[in-house]
Each structure stands twice: as structure tokens, then as C-alpha cells.
Image (cartoon, rainbow, N blue to C red; front, side, top):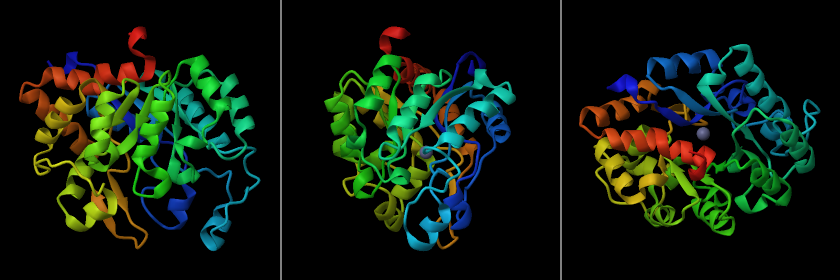
Amino acid sequence: MRKEIELIDSHIHATGIDFLNYYTPRIPSTHSLKETISEISEGGISKAVIFPFPGTLYYNPTKILKFGSWEPSGLEDFPYQVENSSLLREIKIENADSFFFPFLAFDPKEKVLEQCEYLRLERQFFGIKIHTLATRSTPSDVDDRLLSIVEEKDIPIIFHTGKQENTKADLVVTFAKHHPNIRVGLAHLAGFDKAILEKVACLPNLYIDTSPLVSLCYFAQNKGLRERYLSSRIVELDYGDVIDVVLNLYSLIGSKLIWGTDAPFGSFSDKSGKLVVNFSYKDEVAILNKLLKAGYVDVVRQIAGQNIKEFIFGKQAI
Ligand SMILES: [Zn+2]
């Protein structure tokens, strides 16, 4: 039964080094493609949407860490030039095309023309990832130059969401409302924000990923972590029971809910060097296995299969 189901992870980071994490120092700062392939294979996952790490060496890490100023390093002509091309190159070298749907990282506030020229020429990607925190941007910074590429290629854009003003999930909802022809992804369950989850259910072009669900449920059960990482308008669920959380989210969001792990960020430390959570890829995959064991085969087929394909390719393409 388990082997017959094609399972997809909608949110993984790999290749390269996140230099800001490396020098802060904070883990994780890297995740090799080989390690990623092993993890997903051992977990019985067939494919994964894969992004580079959030940071880019277009900006000089010394200036950021020492002075808080964001200046070009001279190492790249435009943001994510090396990070994106390395991701695609490593997938080729490892002969791993069948494992991945690469999404390329984009900075909507810097050298947009140059990034768009690169995207127009590159064919080996399936979507765009905008890390609003790492790029200090909001979804409304995305202009027509990127939008026209996204519409032409008929690919989705996924946005990081979090607690900082520019990363708030309602900005992604507004973007999805303004662009009904574009498939939009909202990462990290909007910190379980009740109002946002309800809005996602009503917007046909907006999808929400569960990454990293085990960690998010852990945060929800701890007052300090909840305040630090989750919404202040959290939906009432039994967060001690991850399966119950998935089933409740599925009944609310249905075809718009997509399973993702955010690997390797299921284990990360804060700026003081303290490990905040320490979950593994296996812990995230265990959710799907528990659901299958309990007979929720259709739920798994949707959230880790059909829904993700619809997000990537559009409903009419499947
Ligand atoms: Zn992520």
C-alpha cells in the first residue's frame, strides 16, 4: 500500500551555504544534495520541491554582520546568481532530476532586471521562492517584470511568512487576491493564524504549506515559543496530537493544504547558540505514515500528492 503512493515534499532547502547562519553562528547553515536524496529516499518520498538556502552571497556578509548594512559583495552580479545556478548544476551532476522540482530564489528589491533576464533564459525550474525575511521584502515588492515571467511560464510563487512586519501572512493573502491568475504559496502555515487559514480556504489560487509541522505543533504547546514563532491569533487545536491537527486543517483547507518539511530547518539553533528544536526528516515523514496507518489514505494522497501537483502545475494541467 505505502509503496504505491507517490509522495511529494513541497518545501526543502539544499546545496550551498547560508553564510549569515554560518558566521552568526547558527545551525543549519548547509544541507547537501546527497544527504537530501538519502533522507527523502529513506522516508519513501518520491519527489521534493527544492529551494536554495534563504541567504545570498550577492550581499557582503561582513558588512551585514558587523554593521547591519546590505552592500554588494562583488561575488555575484545579482542576488542568488550562484545559489540558483549551483542548485540546478548539482541536481544535474547527481543525475537527480527525477527527485526534484527546483524553485529558484528571487530578491524583488535588487537587480530585478538582471534576475529576470536569468529566469527568462533558464528552463529547468518549476517555481519562484521569495524569502521575505532574507530579502527584507514584502509580496507587494514583486513588480510586473517578475509577474510577466511567472504568467508566461505558468509557474507558482511561494513566500516565506513569519512574525516580522514584512513577512506577515496577510500580505501574502493580499497578493493572492490581487493576482488571481497566479498560483501563490504561503509557507509555514501562517503560524496557525485562524483568520489566515480561513482566508486560504476561500481563495482558489492560494495554497498553504505545513512546513515544518512537527516543530510548529511543538511551538504551539510552549508559551514562550508560541509567542516567539506563531501567530497571536492561533487556531484552537489539540497540538499534542499532530494527526488531529492535520485532519482539522484538512477539513478546513482541503485541496489547498500542502505537506512540506522545511528540511533541514526541523532542527535549528537561535542566535545564542541554543538548539530551539531538534526534529528529523523521519519525524516529519512519520506524520504521513501514521495517517496512512489510521486509514486516511485519501488525505495523504491529497496533501502530499495531488494538491502539490496542482500548486506546481495548475489544476487544468493535471
Ligand atoms: Zn523554508
